[in-house]
Image 1 (cartoon, rainbow, N blue to C red):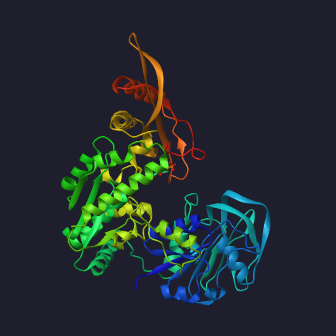
Image 2 (image 1 turned 60 degrees about the vertical axis):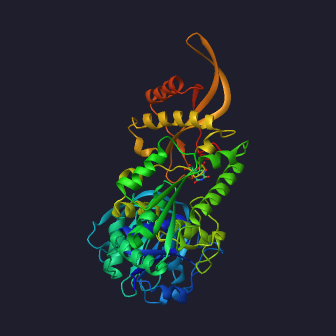
Image 3 (image 1 turned 90 degrees about the horizontal axis):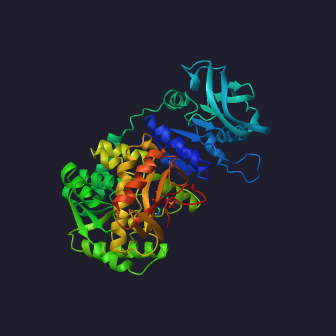
Length: 512
Ligand code: XMP
């Protein structure tokens, strides 16, 4: 049975980061809801438990808790921040509200350098972020470390193998945090490790083969990373019975279809069919100006075309989806607990269940950055793995107003200039997206001796970590200047360029 560490979720963002760090240390981890029962947990056969941090306070009557019997299971436990406070209280200690809390860097004095601090210096830089603190530790526990302002910064019981820290070992601001987690996993909990991407590929290939038998699997390629990795992984398992379908909706950027074509015929040959559906999409979008109406129309047209294109594929019983682990965790919390049904995600074009395929979701145990590592391990080209996100509805949501052949031509040209020029920016790695938006606004200009009356292009160039929040990039003026003059000079129908200086929130990244 697979070696697994269960991370108790008391506040999602902390749990996900911790789970990710444990995997980086070579041990497979899964996030469990804090209400998991003792029997459900035993079903997972965990080698160790981590109690995550979280924004709540154990002093609130409604605080997220856990089944107390779990603390007596003889499974090594490591509590972090809220996790430390919760286990201290459950085991008979006391937690009190501090005066104003402690946030930021701190110097940790280690007084017991065995167990989780083994091999580390006696003074460590750590990152604190807490309001409450432990004032009385449970019986049979020792204080392992303290800071000038936190007398209980770490506790432990070597017999029960239960430990806790008030600081955050999972964040980069705790430079030796990974060493502390490693000590817990390998020295305290006796993990063997060895969870690597090549092991993941090996196990996935076996699983996919046994799930699909002799059937074929359809993969809807979007041109993005996730769907390509899904297709490559399934191809590794069943070869040509993986049937990739890429629908050219006519809403893509310059040369994008050619790039997808060359990527999957030359660089990384896959069994791929490219469907030219440009006309169907343009016809369907005629006269539509409302953003949500555009999205709906594009989604419905995609389904119709996908259905027609796949109906004759022999033995195609399965449809692959690029569902990722955070999607699974989020839908699980939305449903109230780990035992609730996990909803299936439809990342590519919103494919409905009525299509009649059985779903196969080979990435559903992986985090976003692990998908890239997997893609690299599978040998997918770097130019694919480094692609910036691009929305499913494509350029349609970057043309304000009606989408027509002419507006697409103007936007594509302007966008290709943005794409070329942004490569000159030194901080290119920080760019989440850099694109042009075509506004249905005409303004007056003068070119040579001629008066012009033409459209406006807005530039949207943002940094972001996950698309949830974003900031506009303070691009050097010479780059902005080149983008502007090239667009005005080279793109027919544009005589003005503006720079979008709105952050998200309150604005969104896309204009529609
Ligand atoms: P917003 O505009 O909501 O965008 O700030 C956040 C991220 O999501 C992308 N985006 C979409 N992706 N279908 C997609 O597949 C959509 O309808 C869609 N709308 C926005 C956007 O490009 C950004 O990366």
